[in-house]
Image (cartoon, rainbow, N blue to C red; front, side, top):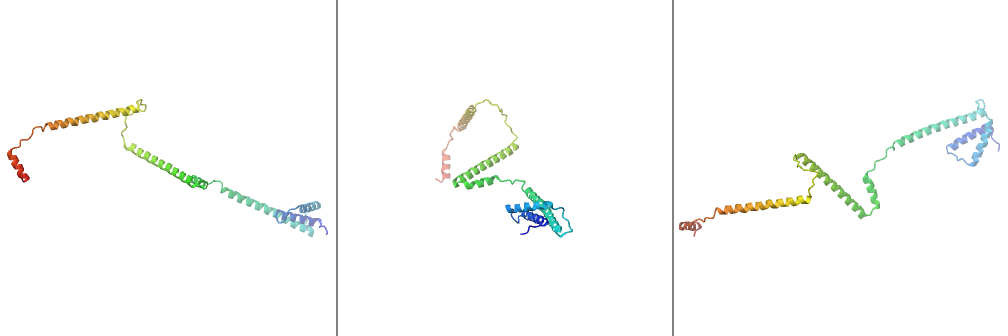
Length: 212
């Protein structure tokens, strides 16, 4: 087989390189060796001229290679720009609801433990709501109530002693009230000690009223 001349060899080499970069053919060891030999032959070739057919062929291949390189560079810039724009859409991390983690953990929990967790959660939620409601009612009451007791924050009295004093005071009040009621009843009964005098005429009238 006749070896190609230098111009044809260079043209084939540039075209083959373009095919390799486009992944049309695989770059194996034999092809690499052939391209090295072609490149060595091409060292003696000067700038391509348009006045001969051979030089025209290599000029056409060179022009195609340059156009391919520019197109490839342009496509790479477009691809990089599209990739950057796509990445900008995912700069903000999504906010995952706390309940989502609880739901995902359900897959690894037995049913009775899952039910226990739900009950505990509901109880805590209910206790918080009751506490919140009591605080709101207390706040409303404090706004409506203008009375403020005169109290000392740093009281030294024993709470048990205070309770005993209140109990004794209540007992004393009850005893005094009982004595007052007894005295009042005696005074009231004392006004009716005299018995009424019933005459014979009164008896006859009473019997007539009763129909006897």
